[in-house]
Image (tube, rainbow, N blue to C red; front, side, top):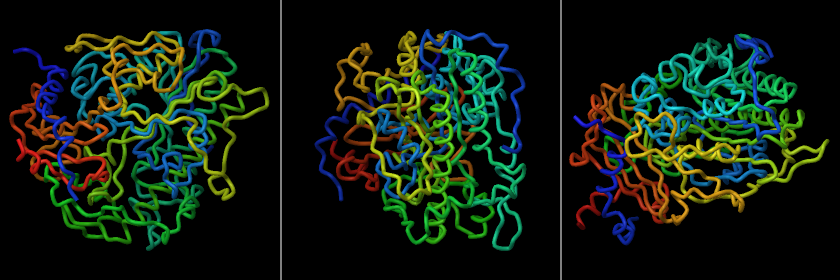
Length: 560
């Protein structure tokens, strides 16, 4: 039997979407706990700094574009906004699957989930699909010291219980020691007892080890920057932050930035009438938390009480501000070490997170709120001028400082882009050869990429254009995502089905005009989708239905 390929899957989708251009004319509807690395940095040889630019890749967990630089006025994110003011910010960037391990493996290898065959947390791509190179591996092979701090790859089986060491990293990755307490009973409830809650603002001095994972990651990243400064060699440092991933365990003072009376509900908190059951995410991981269990919410659709919805949104935003403070300390250290003039900074999230839109919470869907992510690139001397000794681009800004001004992005790119483009983009920005585009069947090819470089959108006139996309117009650009389901109706494992349980795959295409999704039969044994067996469909027009509440798939199908 011919081995199925991701290209075949998307080709079938393209055929099923052949009518899509016609749809565009359709009528609109209505400190402590520090743990040192196992291996010293000093023993690894690196290339000379004069040979290129360093890279600082900041990866955030579950962060939707809820930032001041993306127009979210309520959220206080002055340090990330400051980074944006010296960067080109992509306004329409999308992940390829809205769950941690599949998304991270996808953008770190530059390949779609149908190529990595990582749809859950229980497959390692080098074993189950192909020995694909990763971004840090490519930089390592080109003379960089590659360093991982915090959550970069998803830990566990999907990265071989090693964060893909030694392939991707020069030394073993660092994980904060306090990470082990994230899901334990460390949240003081109204009964003064400790619980494993969803909403968990803490007094940092009272938690185990007296610190939190993201604080430890920042401290270790700064220590490594100091080390690399002394070595004067090229480095690729990836820093992965946990927040705002659940539980919302953050220093309690950040909750004060968001008085509950100022917190509104999602603009569309109801489940859309035309939403196919297979498309619904029953947010089971939220329901597992003790404070949510106490609400006795019906499964799968039962709404969260209004007041508790506000508390979730409050703590999500507070977690974002806590994250912002950590990013601020990290970037300030880059300045202090005089590394800002020779270090590319990329800032990205693995996927979004629903905050009550469509009656849903968390990720696990193909909606924009789950797939759209912040993405920005700072390139010294390109997106911002070089700075002189003593000057700073990224001085730390206190989120509690009410006098700080809201900063606007240095540049905005409105094109639809995908995270699979991160690999070629960073390669080109660093002056490395951009890996070739993957052919139709690339399972046996270790180094190639499935997305175009985004450098041409940064308005650098002297950078070469990617021939694959040099003639494409914005209206032609699309972003693909997909999500697996075990059944046509929501059940206990709908959010995170194991590979063997996947029966349906929702393939989604996002253009400037619409989001179109088809839920089709999927065979997990040979990784094939049957586009002749459509279980359900969704179609939302961007201009008339930006929140994706009015599914007109069935009405539109009746036209043809």
